[in-house]
Length: 313
Image (cartoon, rainbow, N blue to C red; front, side, top):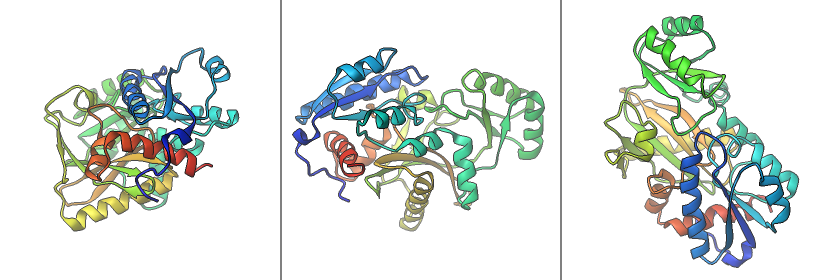
């Protein structure tokens, strides 16, 4: 399938761009939604925005909507619930379906699927008590990284080097999610790899003076480095792209997605997670990768929207 959309912008009908919502990633989603809506309208698409709130069902019934462009990040938009609602309403939408959306939002179960297929992902444990923290420290060693199992944008994440710090990080992450994951820390470069319409885009190498690529580095800082080309040999870059394709296929993503991958000192790649509604802000990575593949932002959003026509009919 071509990266570019060959459809007339008018062929999409009336498009609702869904953004905002109530998740912890609301602020990022508002920025993403504004950018996507502006690009669609500039391209000649009959698009309008909906900040998804308590009145969303009423808006859905009141508006004429031919298809939806989902730019909701996190719970309520990226976890399968919005996808299920739109399917019940008979409204085609962008991105992954119900199962892949729900699975990718759950970092723990994504890892379990990858483990079952022999795909490399860091060793981990689930934390629900102080005793779990002590057991995880003994089994996995330090350093470790703590993550809420169902949040994105690095919200609630922390790198820890002691049992005391692990307990404190678990308690903090538990404010966001009843299920908290702790993973072995992989020391080495991080890469992010986008998939669009079945094709893997050029990987981006990430560099930050922060201890990891956290919320501030993702959305606020000006000292985050984005390496394109990513710095890998042609052979290792091909290996990374192949691994990303397999990881996304295992989860069942459609349309577009972005995988985050670490590389250790021996050169081994480790899968961290897949995002089914990646950020579309001025700091975001999918637009950056698309540019490297020859697509400007407007062409990117049209390609994502076109997939809602061609993938689901």
